[in-house]
Length: 381
Image (cartoon, rainbow, N blue to C red; front, side, top):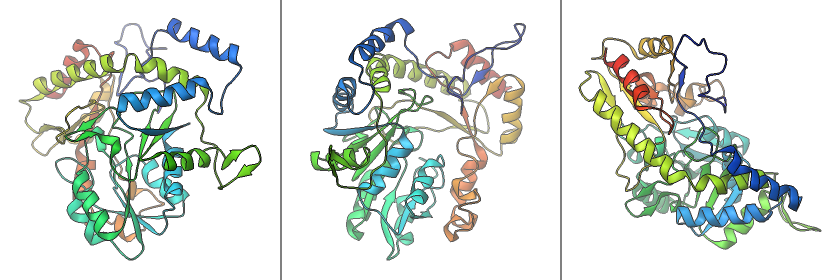
């Protein structure tokens, strides 16, 4: 996905600017200049500079977690999290996500085992996890889909009963709080993404939330080629470090994130009110989170609606509204996965149904009320 989505360059001045599914949150450029000037003065571009250290602490404070390791992107963070816990064999995961979730397993030589999703939350269904466990299963990799919390208590109970690790893909869940506190504190590790299209972005970036200082040190070694000091290498690490420029941008972004989430909340409510009476359109709700981030606005186009999902999707494009079918196709339908027994549609009936009905409508802080009304009116008409 383009990082500059939402711009109106090269559009016909007689036509409204296209409306994309998201638009990156950017502060005023002049506010970022002082950070760049400091980096130029320091001449410290990477390798855990002063902005990197400040940003790690600022994120721990904001997210109410004790230990966090910054990464250049969320995918490398996922790959490294699996390495850090020495995961092998088979890992149970969801077919209803962005491909990076399962790709991180393949990059580690791990076999994904797909399990169906809950029809209400669209998260991994705990009731189906236990039946998928084999002697080769070593971990569970759930996704907090659309930023809505998984059933963390039931998943952890299953993991404890079978001696499994739990790694959460929390790419959608920045700032989300469950009923018992910050969502990323759950699991053995939790992975965040700060990609340009996320609620909170650092251009590109990611992080691993760690339960203790020892685990963080190990993760920090892995993301820096395994180096402990100039002459000591303790692990076959990778280069996953976040740069000073990304870290500085993240510090600036944190100043405006609460206001941005509040604007998303207003847009979410406006969509729900406008679409409440539209037969065949179901607006997905949360999963009991105490604090939401309104990362996405997914609707399900059900049989009662006069158009198919794909016909509505095309109609919206014809009117300059570039919504997205998140997540279609299922990960399990891509060539590198579809031959696996767990990828069979008979094994994933709920995920298949949701993937054929879902459209994520545009939502981002700069989206105007008039644009929301235009989108909702087109769907209602």
